[in-house]
Amino acid sequence: MKRSLARPAFGIGVLTSLLCALGVTPPAFAAEHLPNLGCVGQARYRSMTWSAATAVTFINRTTAPVRTYWIDYSGKRVFYAEIKPCSGYVQQTYVTHPWVITGQMGDGCLAVFLPAHRPAVAIIDPWRRAGGGNACAPAAS
Image (cartoon, rainbow, N blue to C red; front, side):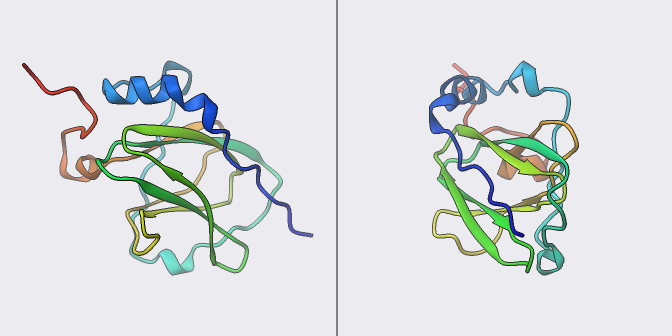
């Protein structure tokens, strides 16, 4: 029997968006940042079980909207949410359920995240791989 995941609640992202714009990770989720597993080999990812519930806070630190896709039990993408630039949302999920982040058109791959046993943060940030920067940080005066 396939279980469905809860759709995102968009009203809770205001504080997350403000903190993101300042380059600060929300304190309640500061304990763990999920690593970007990379897009190479994403075809091998699929959801396995639904026995360990968790949550991921997706934060978009890019200058364009991104889309989140759950990878189902057969390895297919299932669209869940579009995240505006410098914004975020909390997604209820399960530990063995991978998530792919794409551009606004839903094509390609920007990142792949696998949830942890405890609620964690997945930061979508083009500079995270390059070693610095934050598209949402206020400009220096």
